[in-house]
Amino acid sequence: MLVDQPGGATTRAPRSAERAAAIRASLGVALAVSAYGFSFGALSVASGLDIWQTCVLSLLMFSGGSQFALIGVLASGGAAAGGAAIAGAALLGTRNGLYALRIAPLIGGRWPRKLLAAHWTIDESTAVATAQPGLEGQRTGFWFTGGLIYLGWNLTTFVGALIGNQLGDVSQYGLDAAAAAAFLGLLWPRLKQLQPVVVAIGAAVVAAVLTPWLPPGIPVLMAAMVAVVVGVTNWWGAKA
Amino acid sequence: MTIWQVIILASIAVLALKLVGYLVPPSLIEKPLPARIAGLLTVALLSALIVTQTIGAGQDVTVDARVPALLVAAGLFAVRVPFILVIIAAAATAALIRAVT
Image (tube, rainbow over all chains, first blue to last red; front, side):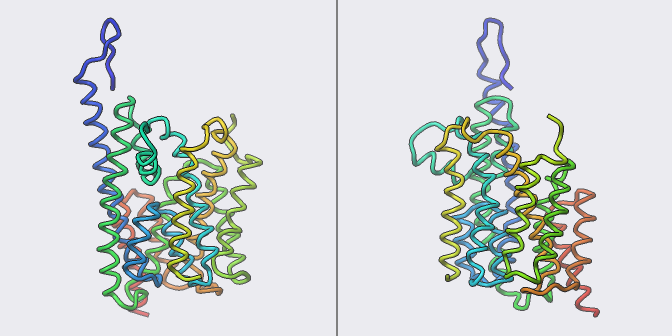
């Protein structure tokens, strides 16, 4: 944290200490998140994508929730469910746009730099950046977390895809059950208030009821309507 | 649509959404309503994906080894076991049930 000196000046030491704290946070988060990459790579080839398609997805899309959603829909509906798969991935990516609003003021420079920052604007880089007390730490936290996860995520995706490719029949190893568990892991930290819990239950019921009646992927998009309705009405929301 | 086209189009859509935040003035969309809906959208989609991954089989609904595997995962997440270990435990549960039934 920046320390105000008598007279308003800030010392150099706390400034680098701030940066060091941000880098420590980045390393911890990047190590933990990169481990998800193994499961993504393995599940992706289990869903019918080849190793190259799996790696290109991690390189170009670089947003775990959207990637898991895309392979989830493709696993049940194949390329025929492509439209629903794209819509699902995009809807899960909308939150990145809101994160970008928070991060944009930290990013100076020209467009290539902003484009790279945009590509690295994900849950974790935003979380580490916004958790730092000072501007210097926020910038450092964002770039280190984004960059380290980009390296780690793509490396572990590749290794996971190679392993998944060797396994053959994946249901024998329970990999199909691992996909649901992966989604649960992404959902779990978001269930800290009543409103998201209600939305999670409502969306689960909608998806379960509609699955036998609609093509794969569409029930998931219909369940998203629960979020829109509860969001607009702010039912079960915290009192302002 | 081919798988490659799905991958490219979806990646462009996800990157475009990230770029939106760098292009528009924050005052335009940083309001409680869009922020609330975006947060809840994530929750609804993840929850719906859990259901279709657990009981879906193409367009059919079925209860099999994936259900107990998900329950094991929920129990482990509740006691804060790390992500990767939970995933392995869930896969192992389903694999074990299938091996003995």
